[in-house]
Length: 128
Length: 320
Image 1: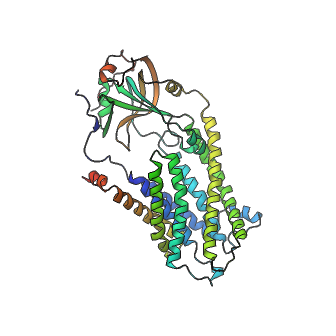
Image 2: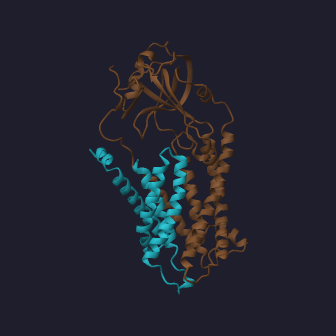
Image 3: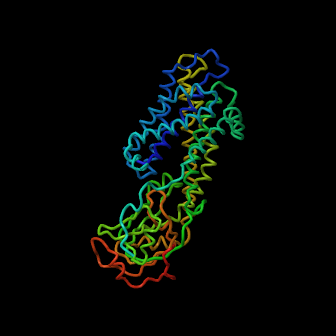
């Protein structure tokens, strides 16, 4: 599996989590709302990443010649990783656009690391 | 010249540039959504106002319009990605060299897909690929600067030749226009749909499930906007495909009747594939069929050399 698809799926999941979770900051009109707890940000992050990455994986299956099972598995694993790890980060950042960009980069990094872990031998051959 | 070595030609991996575009796209979309969060979408604000909504004046408003804009932007970026591939449509083909060679067709592979034609007209693949066992005088076209050489089962070097789908370009341009129009309708539909869901679910601006409800509303806004934008891209792509398929396509016509064992003379743009590292013809510009070889399990360079002289205008010397 080429690392490019992992990076792209990670970036998509990260960007979605970054934007949508950051948008949950209590609007000015509703200042009495309690902020999200860390567990809630993780749960909401996973929910968001799963929804977005399932749609992204469906597109990838239609348009790519890679095996569908592998694509869907990687998309789901990345959704869990990105949602769990980036949800709290996204909520802590100051602005939706900043959160989206930072989490997109972090998601891409997660994707690269996942592919690297899955294909360590192939990466090692490439580095020789 | 000695027989080409099949498979890998040189140690290491194929040098490929950093895949920068997703990061640029993410940055650009993030910046645009930052503006949308603060000010809404110019034009769309007025449409929503005329429909009786105040996109930035309610508790959920900024989040809903930003979610809708994000969904529409995701589809526009997807269509743009395919439209801006270097395939000679909007961006020019990878810089190669015009070459001519001949040989025997070993494999014919139809890469077209009805599902993609219908569901994703912006991503129409090439019509097909055929692998040619080249005459030995053209071995340099297979091996020079290549990282990989494809061979037949009998070990003879082949050159993959890619045939363009002439309706692809129309599909891409049509999808781009359709996605642009669909994005405006999509943001409006996403906002209205999300507002309806918020009302139906009973989301109030307070209560224990307020933030979960807000998340669901944002997701609905994004998904509805993406679906409408995608529908616009599909309809635009179908119209573009129809327009693009009008006119003559001599290579496509010759390709449709091509079969294994055909003796062919091929002209086209000679490049090195950036993913696999093999040399290939991308795309074929002329395809002449000069005969049919006897059926064999696998053709060889000797078979190709035994065919009649080809009609290439000039014999191309190996490039130094």
